Image 1 (cartoon, rainbow, N blue to C red):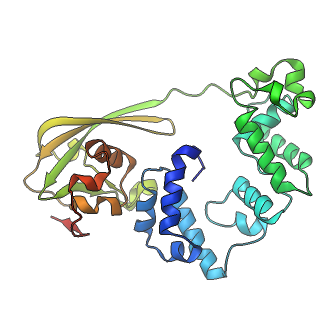
Image 2 (image 1 turned 180 degrees about the horizontal axis):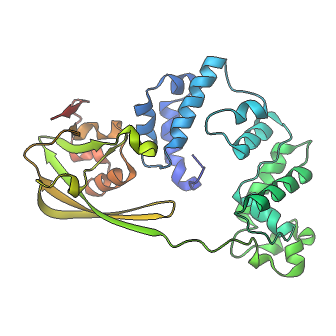
Image 3 (image 1 turned 135 degrees about the vertical axis):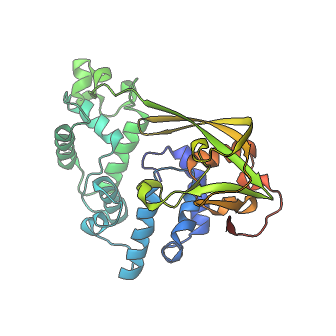
Length: 309
């Protein structure tokens, strides 16, 4: 959950997820839709799908792998995740290099290469392996991560509080604020659109993304206005903003009427909305209209059923 997500944002999802899936067997046995619904709103949904597949593999193979190679082979586990788990859980000598650690190393070694380039990252990872305390790799990795997160921070490094200040090449050269070097980021791509909120007899009209949409396949979303030209707009009820990588989305949510839903759309009971995987935009829109959650739109819980019309 902490991949590409801040700790404060992940904590409520983490607590809710563990309450629903308290162990490996529970997660492995759960339907994918239920896993995605519990993850809904966190974004980067491939993480949830990978974790679900990993749980199923581990359940089949008798438990969690105890080697770096075994962890690395799990769906969604890259070099950093495998090294972090292997070192912290099993005391195996593998350096865990995340963004915070890369920044510490770039300053410590006065690395002037672009930190986003594969060549520079490879050099820094090799340096991390050389510096690693093989006797206490888990504690060493956590110390490096914490140092980057709390002391060797991006804009104003707290060098006076840093235990490595006397060893830091960037500090010695007075260039600690200039490192790490990062090429200028591209301007974000801004996308605007209109989504329709259509309600009927305690249901909301939603559209389920098809498998061809890959990353968000299986998620339910509010329909775009262009897909329902026969809908009658009534009033604008909210504006929702959402960011994914370089894209900045801004949607106007318009309440509308529709006499008959075409193929590909379904009426989902409002009392059931918390149980289905919604796109982040749909969830944000429904929460704006009902701050206590999408299910608050309907009051008492109704039948847990999607009704295609």
